[in-house]
Length: 83
Image (cartoon, rainbow, N blue to C red; front, side):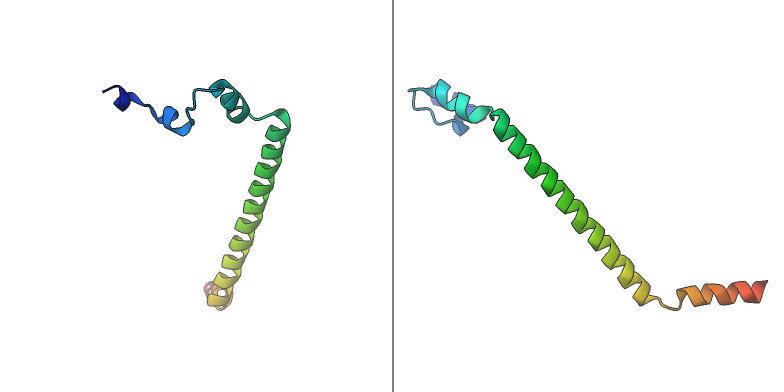
């Protein structure tokens, strides 16, 4: 029964019994340098994602314009006929 009481965190951490506190200190909290590196990579990834999304929006806009080229001319003709 005692073996069934293992929590999810206990499974993720290798339990050797020797220097467990050292493993946790080394792997649980990043150093300031590692935190900065993580922040830089996150900002770069977000910028790249934003760039890809913008390119996709532009591509979709161009495809939409090419699919309906008469849209603008039809609107002009209806305005001229009505006015």
